[in-house]
Length: 195
Image: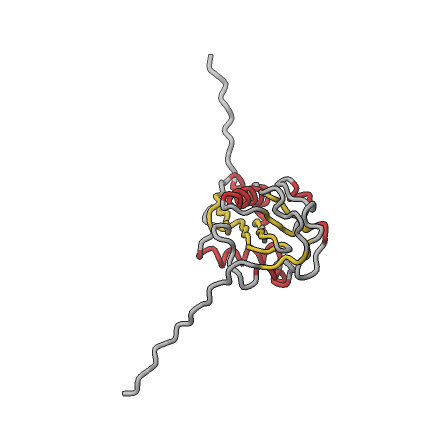
């Protein structure tokens, strides 16, 4: 008697794997296009953007999700002072709308938080949807006395502590503290010499 054959399952393009790696210089144009697609052209005017403008992300905490050679997700973390307490602010987290059912956003979050913890950071703050971020440990418990440099919804200001008490007593404005972006050196064309 012959054993029944298992049906073969055809893999769809949605089953294609993705990989998360450190952001590279070549990712910048793709990242910016993805952020525009996800958040629109007005994203530069958002409140949390004020914490990122002119600053470099925290070392080792800019991640890209790649699938079939295309950037399909991104997350970055930035140094801030949260009412005098050192912390990181996370964002933006973005995933290509065509890939949202693949778990890329959750994988980026887990890897970013693990990397931040491994690098010795004590707390991460973000502005986002509480039901989504609660599964990663974020809550409003430590953010009630913190403010952002612009309008925001209080119930969307969330934090997670890796070190108990890292945000205890944090009161006041969240301000950027990370290193400024390196200034681009302009290259001047050689001057023509009169003959």
